[in-house]
Image (tube, rainbow, N blue to C red; front, side, top):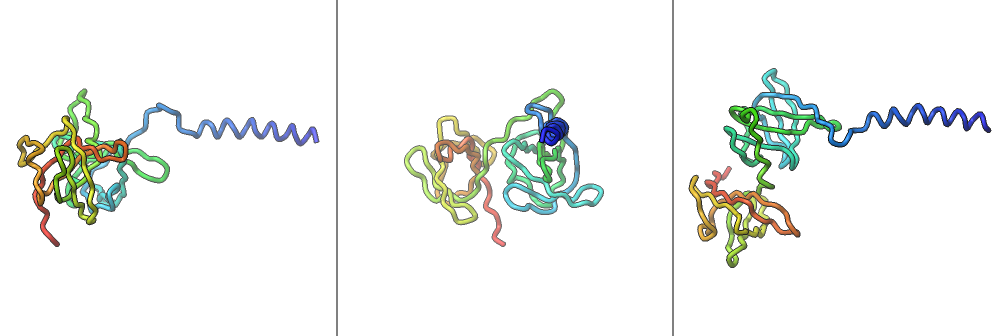
Length: 198
């Protein structure tokens, strides 16, 4: 019995440290890899397939920490379309490749921090405006979403500053929002041209 317990104790001393060394260390810098290619297709709201310069198809995933840029300006993930040539800075987590930075054009200037993502993106058509702080948006999936605005909300229409009173039923918009207390609170509302019907 004592011999069996001694063997078990030795085995635990060997196995447990090896397991601990394999776990990710909090705060440890993630090793990133760079890739370049053309977006082949969007595979849902959080992934896309890239055809790399050496003609390989790779699926990348995005998450709330992913950052998106076009010509050094932050944009939403939905701004990227199939056929767009992009650069990807990514890392591996489990069996997936996650995007750290996805950008078109030149990378951010050295020493300049990349702005954080502008919240979650929502695109659709305004159904109605309620009071002075709510707008109902109909998504392409035919779902009505109530968006709340705040004094800090920024409005842009035709590349020009706008305001809440410019929100009209029938207008197509893209909303960057945060989810607070189960409410969609807008950071920015951007007017977008209507997409042609298939």
